Length: 467
Image (tube, rainbow, N blue to C red; front, side):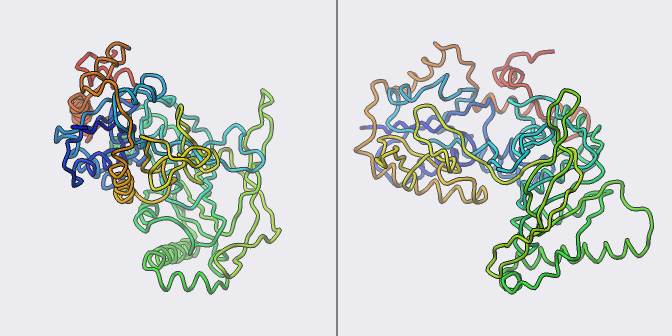
């Protein structure tokens, strides 16, 4: 083959890194890459999975943009794999495909009552406050007391966005509909639950510090959560700088809490309660006016350290009144049409990125990278080494890939035109990007994100958005 034609499905960090590494790999043949995404704009998780008040993390977009702006990767946005484009289409036009579709659904939490009205997945809430075009424009923010289950960075993002005053988000790119919703949020108390102790949290120190800096919010901790004799936790803190910093932050909050209690003055208008050694075991519900079970409390069991980094149950149960809850216990991948899928792990089964079928046999021409390959673990930067492994496997398999019948570069464009797919391009993203920045500048903000898919597509294609 004179030119290797590769399709990559998913234009988030994993897909863009894979494209970049493939083009930079040592080889003696030409490579042509087409990058597809079901959304009109690129960047995936960075655009739709990072809180708007985290501009430092969103700065990774600059690096991803440099890759797309080189001009050696074609971007086809607003193309849905499975409907607009099928695996048979890819076989006809490419030598191989790399799936980099990520993990955008919520991992399940199997406790009674978890499906009650007022119970939500963190991933859905994140998509809403990040202006994802495929979620409803409104969110039911009606509860004064809210529970968040989880001890990772997503749990902190959700907690911070729920407890933060909406006006403090105006310096960010928060969409107008999200600002309007959060402005009416009646929350007074947020309860954050973790099954293990404070030494075992998965937060990063930066995220934790930011939580404590939110205006007009008191951090509330239970001193008893820090009194367990746990040699394993002590060794963890002593040997891990990140754990040590987190321990110092929480001890600072405990001191500030004691000083507030001693002063006996007016506190903040909102409170964030951190509950450790607290395992959610059920959601307590009551029927609403329509007879639908609705969240009224979360039932937790007190746990204790087992000395090995795990927990034991104590049998001590209590109910904490809440009117809504969010589970932030991890993300989960979604199955793709005619592509093998492991429903237990939420990934495409693979060996080093080489996709395997149900019998464990390698599927020729099909590869995976990113969270859909390894599960939702690791930070964005980890996707580079992950992509390199996949690329090395693909290049080693060069003689065993598909033999496309129509590999010409204009063939896929003609196919999508024939099907009436309103494709967006890198140039279209530049138009949308400039449009959002202009919307923000008009009101003294850095950006106002366009939310409706139809408007995103229209602006990207140089058409007038809806009135």
